[in-house]
Length: 220
Image (cartoon, rainbow, N blue to C red):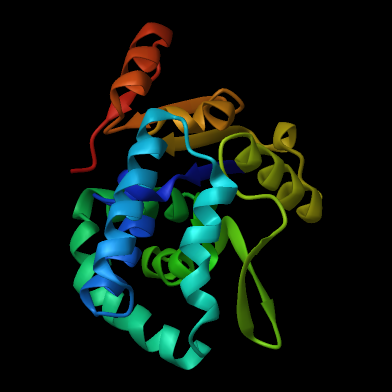
């Protein structure tokens, strides 16, 4: 059996679900535009530059989850899927995921974006396994904090190893391993698998993929 891992934002999606969730809440008037739009743009620029402090970002990104009941959050997320997410899913991305699923591979989406935002998106792709940053919750209500290791940079490797350990299937036991990603932030995991694939990569990853002979594909 092969292990196939997919990054989500700007890989399977033609956009960033984390960024768009905040923008969606701003557009709905849930978050103050003057305050949150500038911060959202600042963190997104830091992510692209490779300078993001993930814990500072998560304090910003998860705080709104603690302010509203889960039923309201879920209702907004259903609107978000229709307004923002489904338009970012192209047929090539759906075909790529379906090809690996149909081949009987063990597939997972591995993303730094929190599981509240990304759980429904993974289900949209038909992928049962999601490794994401986990927002803390008590009695079904979010606290605005993170629990465990954020699935970001080396955290993706750590969270993957935890998940595989729970399955009793170390990486070396798979006949092949794949990771599809757009970002230089994912180099730790790209370097870990047998088949790293750069998908519509950022400039830094494109240069590295070219130098190392990694496949470069587009899902746009």
